[in-house]
Length: 185
Image 1 (cartoon, rainbow, N blue to C red):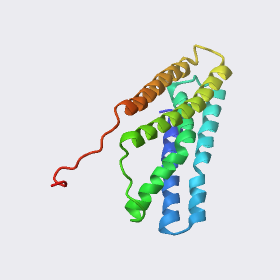
Image 2 (cartoon, rainbow, N blue to C red; image 1 turned 180 degrees about the vertical axis):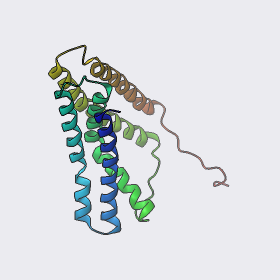
Image 3 (cartoon, rainbow, N blue to C red; image 1 turned 120 degrees about the vertical axis):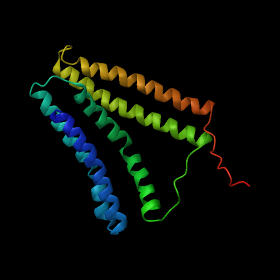
Image 4 (cartoon, rainbow, N blue to C red; image 1 turned 90 degrees about the vertical axis):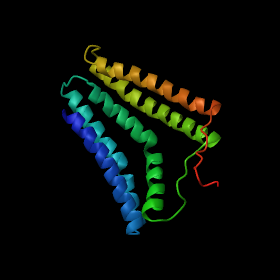
């Protein structure tokens, strides 16, 4: 596995370790400012990944799908980072600290709106990641060496289209509420 692949794995692990540490320090040890500091470190992890990817490409490495994955990771982390932290925060409070409301499964129009919001976050991630991919393609300047990057861009655009189609389908066929057997009797 290449340096970039290991860096992506390390950054993903680091992202969740920093979030977990932030939540633990914030709620278990009641140190809100220090916990917030750890939660705020997540963009630093993105900058490390960006620097290592740029260094690898500037040293003459051929652009691969792993380099493309770094751009996708950065886009997703920036676009979804705040909502992922909020998601983890809500569940940590409820399941670990036994505080707050139990996270509920969204249904109907609420689920459709939430899904569409997620699709727009995906669009933001795509725009950020695509900008990075296009910048790499431009800087390398050799279509043969960047075919993995342009192929990833096309695939991601297709996935984005499918994501929007699924989200829009929830407005036509809203998610029904699950009925628990034996509780209504």
